[in-house]
Length: 128
Image (cartoon, rainbow, N blue to C red; front, side):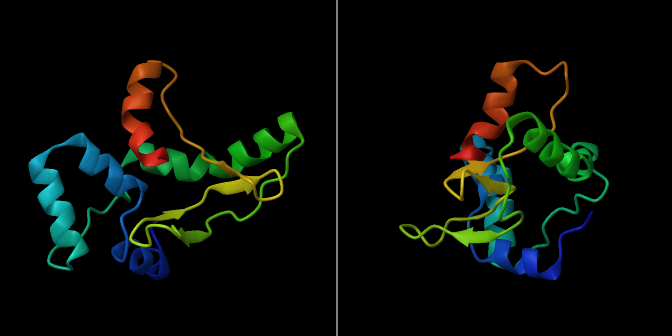
């Protein structure tokens, strides 16, 4: 599932969760590429053939249904794009909100063999 033109335009105007992972990862080459992408000097990577990305896109509707079935909590605002009020250069595309819009729901598809600390290292910058 490719990003829509609207999603690409939104992501080009702000620093999002995936960008935070790059920045916090500390790889100078990746950070420089991100800077060039944000300036429009370089194309972002095409993630159409990246299996973990596609698995996450494919399983998100299942995860939503499973979450609601097991908690009784309704998910709203799926894929809504938001900018931070305090830091308007920071943005996100929500997987959804619960509890009458008070709680952000973030869904990640990870390997059953992944260790908790590896998952946290990979996604914690994105979630903050």
